[in-house]
Amino acid sequence: MGAWLLGQVDDWPPLRAEAVPQDVVAADAVAWGQRWGAATDRVAIIAMGDGSAALTMKAPGYLVEGAEVWQKRVTQALADVDLEVIGALDAEESSAYAVGGR
Image 1: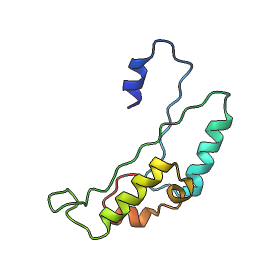
Image 2: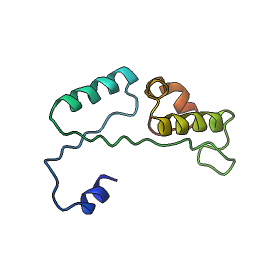
Image 3: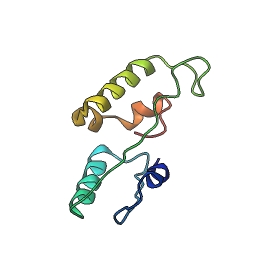
Image 4: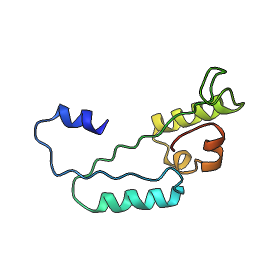
């Protein structure tokens, strides 16, 4: 995603790439975001994560009950920029639904 964005603009300010471990607790992720945001006057953060890989019987994680409800809740939270829901995503629950990142 980042490489694609770079190709779309001719004049970019200085860039910095960071990766957050998959198992980071939400409070630490928020703290990292706050530090990055305070580091300069102009900041853009691209946050990406996987959806559930357990939504159908043919999915890599097979079909796991509750995965569709989880996926809809997360999708809606992202659309609404609902930081409370996003910040409360549980690593163990996400893992149960074959989510590679959160």
